[in-house]
Length: 424
Image (cartoon, rainbow, N blue to C red; front, side, top):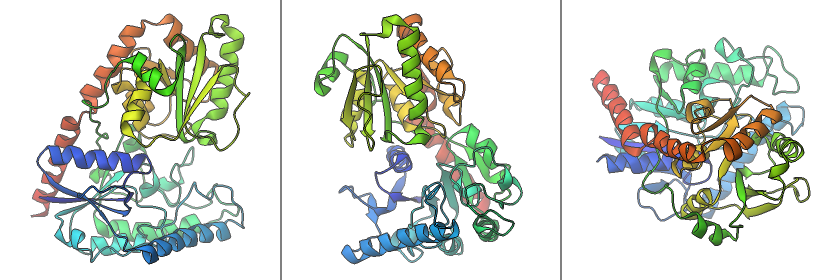
């Protein structure tokens, strides 16, 4: 069985990380697997890029820009929600690519930002090869949005889209919905969601066959992401040895969707309500900081910037006492999985797939959605009231039980075999 995983990027973004980890897990299970991407950044021979030099890269940018312009134009030249939606109106033709022709199963992951168009997915379906699609957000099950939030229109027919400035019965969302429905119905795609939460949201979509939807989590190399020497980890980043440290991480630290405002309010509440946090608690930020945050928080902060080296990221999880993710939209965050595997408890809002990862007051704390007060309470409970050793042990065990490469690869191989058997 020859498998081809298809993703926009080799390394950038959570979906790319998860896709590449799946490739490693499947390879370790003896499968013949390759990864086809637009943006390749390493010399990994298993990863194949569709790019052919500088001209191709310029075309890639033009495709990306064209999609954004159509959204911008349809949204009455407003930048609001410009990157909260995708329409896949343009993309690269890969149906004739040798890797596609050689594969027995095509396994899509995150294909947006000008990589694959809806029309190209239709061409792939006409090849007659089974298509599996791991959903890293809701986009395959909605018209244009990556997260529908409280909107349930996608369960019947997307229209009057609240992401658009001029919603209507025949707005951009409705046109894309109809195009997707026409293609998806004929393609016979098997959808895999990374969380049970996303599975529940997907099976009610009017775009998918609910009998072809199942949940399989992303895998993690638990032999790599594990507990190491905390003192050495702190010394690597120049962090204080005698403080309680909280890690907050995001590609863009100040992204409102990642809950930075709630985190700021929670820290202020911690400082005001719990006197012992003063002088004992400090904050660590992982990711790009596009807006100045100096002086905003009541505690000392340490910015480590964006890290692409996995060893450095692992060491950072080991350097801190707690990982906090106040994100407002999530599926199954790699960051929580990595932190737990390093025996670092987590605090997050009760949203998306996070409740499947954080077991309340067992390996961390689940805060009420959008409650800065409960977020503060969870941080304080983990660091000052709980049996921290128990939390750390439970965190590690959770990943061993649910997200190991062996467990996840077995689930996918079972699915692949079932699909090929049914096809005969």
